[in-house]
Amino acid sequence: MKVLFLIVLALAILGTGSYFTYEMFVRPKLALQHEKSQLPPPPPPDPTLIEYARVQSVLQLGNFLESRIALADFVGRYPDSSKVDDAKEQLGKINIEIFLSSRSAPEKAVYVVRPGDVLTRVAAKLKVTPELLMRANNLHQIMLRTGQRLAISPADFSVKINRKKELVTLYNQGRFFKQYPIHAWTNSMNKGGHPAIPHQKQVGKVRDKVALVAGHRVTFTDKSYWDAKFWIETTLTGCTLYPDPDENAKDAPNAKPTNGGISLAPADLTELGALLSKDDPVTLD
Image 1: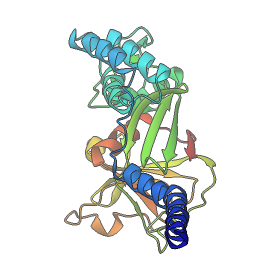
Image 2: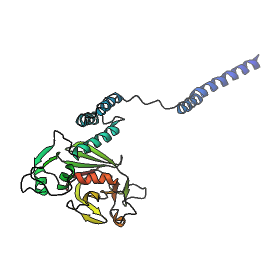
Image 3: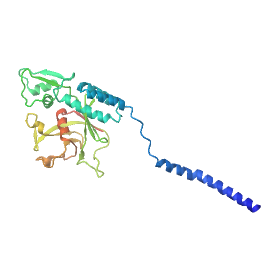
Image 4: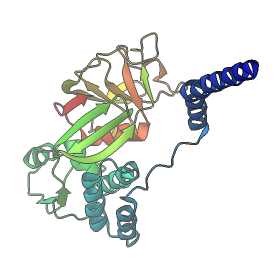
């Protein structure tokens, strides 16, 4: 009987030890393994999708001004929406279409050319560059005709370069206007392949706007001006905006800034070349 009692006692002790070992060590480990094996829970539905669908219904009606209002409202109210980049893309195209065309808009000022008026003088009166006045009114020459009607939207542009999102964003009068994807940071890379420029926020301005044809600088008075490759030089180190280089072009040896820069699509630089002016603010985030 004593032997049987000792056997039962030993089994009880072993069983109790095994139970506590399982509860304290084995079970938590199995639970963790099970948790890791489960797929992450699906993200909650985006509550802004319904509002975005409403904006799209406005766009389908084809009214540019109403579409601009709806998109600008969406971008302003829902900056964290999963559809905000799509809305910005659509808004940017509409802003450009209204700004750089003869489309009417309530904010556009209309100037009637008087005898003796010249392009540069009229541009100064309207507080825009001559090239912007030409582009917005589809002028192919600098000569003006008496009675000619010129329309221009207010132009108070600033640029923000976002390193994390790799975007160049254009603002007019402090409001979103259009964004442009960065294709590459060149000549200022560190060993990790990242832009070798300070990480802190920097503020500068547009230093110069250069139009190149076959490697030679041209001005807005040249007929080839709008066929040029545009560079936007800024006061920020490594932040000259320039078009993607064409290795087969005649100006290929001068296709990249020597001190580093940011390449964009050539069509994007042509737009920026029309819109931006010397001393416009530039921020690097």
